[in-house]
Image 1 (spheres, rainbow, N blue to C red):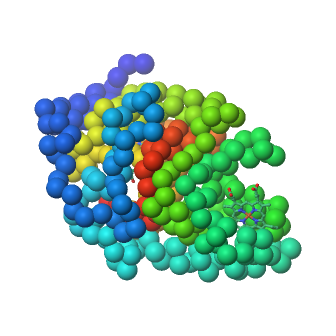
Image 2: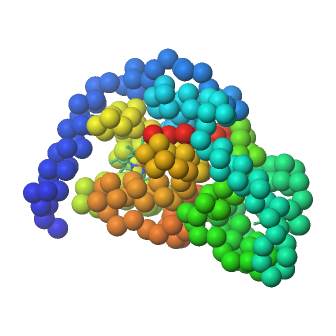
Length: 287
Ligand code: HEC
Ligand code: HEC
């Protein structure tokens, strides 16, 4: 396909912005550590295996401004906690034809859900496929409660996923990547490295080749998933990981996959594998 004038201009924009910073190595651009997010003991870890592409794995927290970090250093300042609290209320709310709540089957979430958010997405032996946290919750709603599914980006789903992931805060991400999950990791990896869109870019072009540099005012991170669902100042609300994927795909002028699609589930699994060992920060605050 021939590049249009517009595409060329956009490419030049990105290339120019990136080149302007290529001589600066990552470590030089990192500001002195500004404390740590609430409930977290490290924001950088060594990769779990040596066959990964990264020498050091950084949480997105590392790249944010002092102001944004401050919102995540104190749970009372963190606007994401509105969703966590709503999720806690929903836990015991009866819904559906069976008159059940999550509590009816799972009782005390601090016990039954501890660590669950750090291992998602997880293989489901009955359905013979992996389920993200959202998909697992909807399976419980339709099968266990005979209640309606929650929409992916609904306030109920965001609240429940934030609540459950928050119960694993500080725990290392530890997705299963072997056995039946292997083809999904491969599929996600393939998507991660494939150039798409008018700008003909892959996830890796920004989050692996250029993290630590700036695109306009945006300080590029490694695009890790440990803080999701995340409160974004730009959105003025909490948002899911798949929403973020869509945003990144639109920015390179490509047609995004749908939230909950197998492509995004695979990408989520691959990202969890790339970020293995990073501590769950949900609800993280990002700009
Ligand atoms: C009728 C009983 C029932 C109800 C009600 C129910 N669940 Fe479940 N839930 C299950 C069963 C059974 C499993 C599967 C356990 C397994 O496979 O290890 C499960 C698994 C889960 C898991 C994954 C746990 C893990 O260890 O990976 C999550 C998360 C979950 N449920 C959330 C919810 C939420 C949130 C609600 C309320 C919206 C809910 N469930 C309502 C029965 C129920
Ligand atoms: C043109 C560059 C670019 C491309 C290509 C790109 N992103 Fe991003 N992405 C960004 C920017 C800018 C941000 C916001 C700042 C940051 O966290 O890096 C971001 C943020 C993210 C975040 C949030 C990180 C956090 O800590 O909250 C994730 C996850 C992410 N991207 C994943 C992806 C995936 C997956 C792809 C490929 C489908 C992709 N990105 C492609 C530029 C890009």
